[in-house]
Amino acid sequence: MDFALIMFVLLLVTGSVWLLDRLILQPKRTEDAAEPWWVEYSKSFFPVILAVFLLRSFLVEPFKIPSGSMMTTLLAGDFILVNKFTYGLRLPIVGKKVVEINTPKRGDVMVFHYPENPSLDYIKRVVGLPGDDIVYRNKKVFVDGVLQEQQKDGEYNYVDGLKFIHTERYNENLGGHTHTILINPEMPNVHVGAVAEFPQRGACSYSNDEVRCTVPPGHYFMLGDNRDNSRDSRYWGFVPDRMIVGKAFMIWMNFGELKRIGLSIN
Image (tube, rainbow, N blue to C red):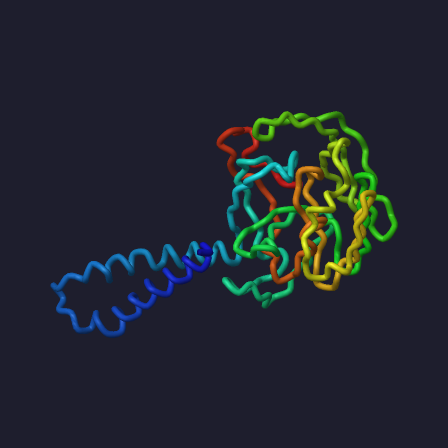
């Protein structure tokens, strides 16, 4: 079950007990009568649950990075904080935007509900905005025909399970936003056989040499920074605005690498 939904149910239960006691039960109790245990516990937990619910729903929410698809920007085991209001205020549970503030920008690291399974949250980088023509060819990104420059920055090796992975590290510039990506030159641009049937599938075309997509209105095209170890918009399509959770901005904990604590997310 979704954690936000669990919090909402607990908030309703404890809040209802608090209101019931204040309006009906308390006036009937004598001054020396003790509160029932269920009233005492509900009144104690209600303000705590309310504070946590409001904080997670409208301000900041923590997430844990489960995989290496965003290396080296984010590592498996990083605990991050996500700004919930930078892309607009949304109603808890239903996710409907009620206050427009900002829209995602190319290069943002964004958390969203996974389109293939909305109960899961994914994190990728925004590459394509609504209306963009995105081409991924020869491990390079083209936006509306313009190559997004890459500059090689050495090599990066890591272990994935029992496999030793060799990659090349590049600094990529997405419309003025520079960040690090990893590329495995031995891997194809996309595993065409792994591409799913997704909504607006007709907006994309695939070949062994390139992926080409025109981003529909109100949607975003996402890529992982570890380009050849990431299941992203190349495989499952676009992220609709209603599925956006927020913008990742800081690593607040990594129990395996304490030096990562407090790093900002570029």
